[in-house]
Image 1 (cartoon, helix red, strand yellow):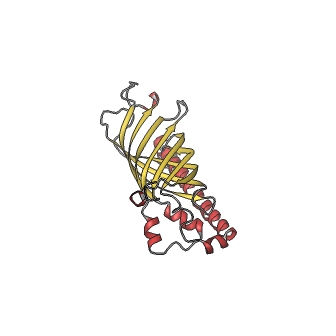
Image 2: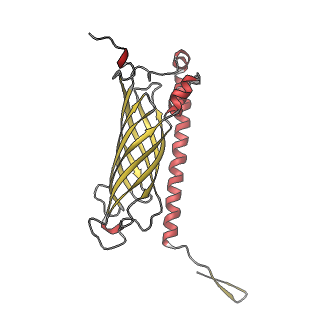
Length: 249
């Protein structure tokens, strides 16, 4: 592109394709986060107005102390920056505080997606519930308490398989795979003012490759993965907390 003014010719560089793509990815992520936050605020306000009696009569646990083992299953969409995929996620928590998770993402064979599929598993910690409950800070509304207590941090190991077109060297099955560490955070927005209920989940993860020989990545810089999902959680009583207190039959 050239600009002419007083017989002076100036060359104005055009944005490169890589820069334009990066800007588009950033805009997509920002829009997703903003929409999620807005929906969270609207849904929280609506449920607060709809359930004032529940908030007043609740003990602050909202059914979370009726058992000691929580299991949740989720399905949604992941954005690998760039590249979309379908996601399935499972989580098991002890006393709503610590547990394990596993997530599988699949690009459904689309060659245009850099990420063909990935699998990650690890540990997750949610420190707010027991701390806030012990300090009598669970005062409602239920949606707000459940949302705050669902904020957690995860640490795991991932394995990913990339499409041949995304590899920086000619396609070799061994080199189009990657192995590394993942650090994540996220939360859940309950759709009902209780533990056993459907919820919307948002999870953001950063991944660091531990395979220097992998051709699936252009560099060893961390990559991001954002997942928006719909799930359901259920509480089970395995009597792990009072196993020693139970009398023999």
